[in-house]
Image 1 (cartoon, protein in one colour):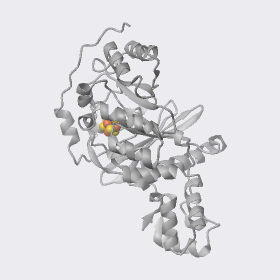
Image 2 (image 1 turned 45 degrees about the horizontal axis):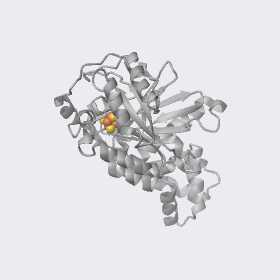
Image 3 (image 1 turned 90 degrees about the horizontal axis):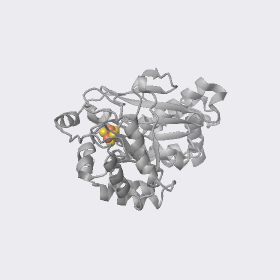
Image 4 (image 1 turned 30 degrees about the vertical axis):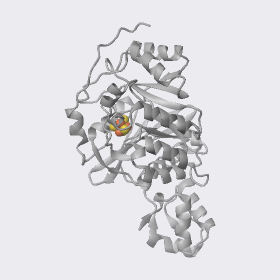
Length: 373
Ligand code: SF4
């Protein structure tokens, strides 16, 4: 039995045609599922009765079951979805005055193993299916609409960031149909500018995304030289900074926004000196149209890392801003429920022993420079 959350509209149409149904039936079905959140075929009143009666034996509409929910004092909500086999992934809803953002996971764990990331420390178990990725949005959107009532407006979630657990571009086969469902006017109808894929720098797949489905792109940079980035983001050894930045330049040719967002996690004494800020300016300015998003590190057990003090973050941001680079410092949300960036850990069976590799790794900590400019 297939899960219809696995299908973008083209695939659903092909399936319907195999059943002798026309494309408009697939559109009706798709709209019932994604726009109205209905999983019971009997309620899909404008479908032909014969189709309504056949579907329950062929297909289902099911998000992964919710294992737990936590609500933060700041309005952030975190759901833990049970994806079976001892794995669970996290999804976070972040309400803001002008938009509702959902942070979606793409893998149970992550094989990249970034040094500062709680998910990376959990190791990697498996890729999520398209249904498990879309299911996070399907559940959250319709659950929030039910709770918020008319206050939800036309939609509760109008911004999706693929920044939860996992490296989305290492699960491209499942990601691509999921993005298409998010963007489809018969699905969630999200703007390409309001769907962001965040990557640690899988260069060939950045090029594929540019060809197949260019949405907003965020790149986890975290260092201004290869030696340090090799330690913080191990994927850098395969795709070093020069190659990554060239891929970003190519991506901009098709991107829905005229800049790439670079994420930079501020680690006390590791990557937060003023000289490193200047090196960052030299690296990206005049090369890639970009915005810098400085992220206060969210400490977790056994990370061995500390958050940069606010004054050093401010001084670092000042160097970038003085060089004409638009720079923001991310406000942390959901700190109290471990829903902030880099804190999502879920529950993961580490099949690839990433966590052991990280534990063995060492990191060169440079002495922290005084926060002077
Ligand atoms: S930061 Fe992203 S790519 Fe790196 S380990 Fe965490 S989830 Fe994986």
